[in-house]
Length: 361
Image 1 (cartoon, rainbow, N blue to C red):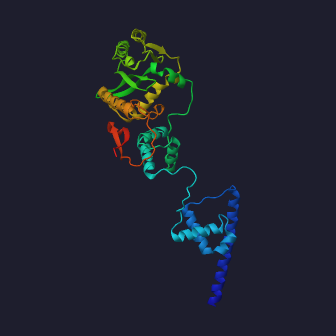
Image 2: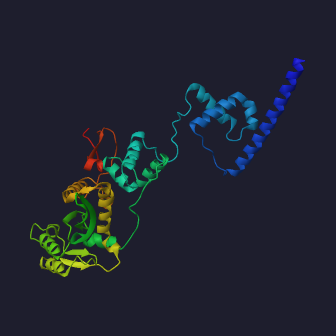
Image 3: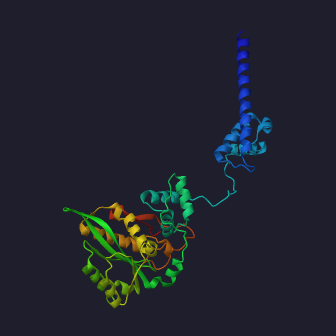
């Protein structure tokens, strides 16, 4: 009686397994029809799984049911698995070699510790003798489920570029930006006047004041045009472009002209014509000022001084070959990472500004 009962149960189980197998084969056939007619690729884990499953089925039976690869291929995987050689093929897969784990960790660190775009990270890596293009940086960040940023908008072409290349050494641009400064009396607004040399991207803080009146502007004009020591004289600028802000008064323009510098007022509603100055304002605010609270004008002065050192000596600039403005030459393309020193990090303003470098090997 027990044998009959056991045989009945086994028969039902076999019929259920056959029905399940038929369904899975139909499902597999449907999925195969959806795939394009191309060679499939398998990870090491899938090769191991197919090899173990194929050996359990038997190679003769496998030839009749296998569709993802030939039975001979799966049998070869199984033989390699038994010898401990699975995944040790000398053949290199398609595409570029995968970035090493240390560099991937560094890229993730740079992105998570800073609000940098892919071009900025690529430039920072180049300083460390690590050559990785912005697209590779983006791919690595996405692989770590981190959305890459690219606030710079590189890739646009304009007739302004060749003009700056030809005449940028004679042109500087100036503009104001404001910063909230706090003291025991409350909040006040500081007006920061700066200028940027278009050819070298070097920046000078011309003055910081609570009242940017005519007297302030006249003194600035005298300072920047003094023979030998005035900033515009030292960089050899003949033209100073500015927007329609009424702070750039007539007496300011006349004193500049007396000092040999022509002030050029840009057309209204044309911020793109003063893009270098606008971009620097965005840099100093996003890199520094929006991350700190300025306590008094002294605190603002110290923050600006630290940022100026960082900007000129440490921060890579894409239009200068990823070299800082004070560098003598663009950053050299690395040939090999072998024998290089340990990567260090120098911080300013309590870690708000970071500079990565290689220590001497």
